[in-house]
Length: 288
Image 1 (cartoon, rainbow, N blue to C red):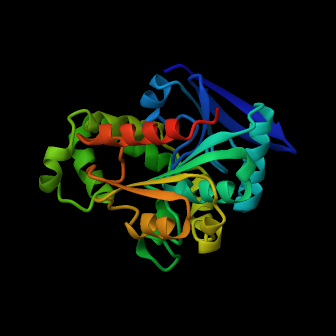
Image 2 (cartoon, rainbow, N blue to C red):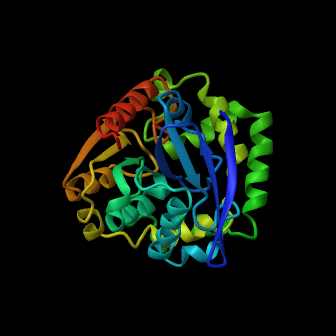
Image 3 (spheres, rainbow, N blue to C red):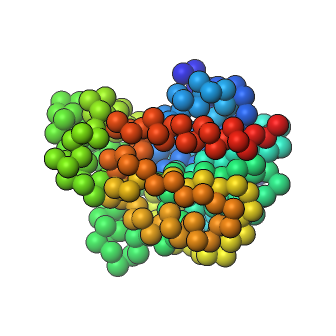
């Protein structure tokens, strides 16, 4: 895939973004520890004539952390980016920790949004400060140490890819490795390796930890565009209460529970189901 990476400066802040493909535009709010170089699910979208615009969210990549003061401020800048790119209306795709950004944007900029798709997305409070996982994340992914964390993981992953895959598997799935064996593709091990090579947390994940707990039911209830909620039945990272919460509060929504092996719904033997369902939803709600 040919990816064009650019920056947009507005009011003293910088937004890094990439564009891949040509066709109806999809604005992607990537997940945690990611950036404008995200890849999961992109090949199918490009093949089906969609253009993918992926800004590095607040604090990720070289996007200014200052725009992450709140979801309101961050989404103001994402709207400015669309104006800069002369895009009047887009499909929204919000992934994992990017869920709150997608929800807030769809609720507050309805004139710019044709459809919203939530994939493995956070849709309500997640990881409270008293939680063990929150405290560990604050330590391991602190802006002063996260570079070493990812460098160590990438180096170890290159030497022991299968071992790292098995270790990370339990974070992403509520199945045991034995239970999930038939759902795993041999290519999944290399996809995890490539993911670990491109991921960085910078200030972005700290911002996510704060903003993920600011979304409430009224934000979802304000969404009026057609919405597809996609989530694995075996997601071990974001509990099923998140897709159900979105489905209960977004009036024009469809819930699609997938049989993929876990949180990364673009991997595994059932990944074609993810692609087909998403493409079908997008084409049935064409911008044109």
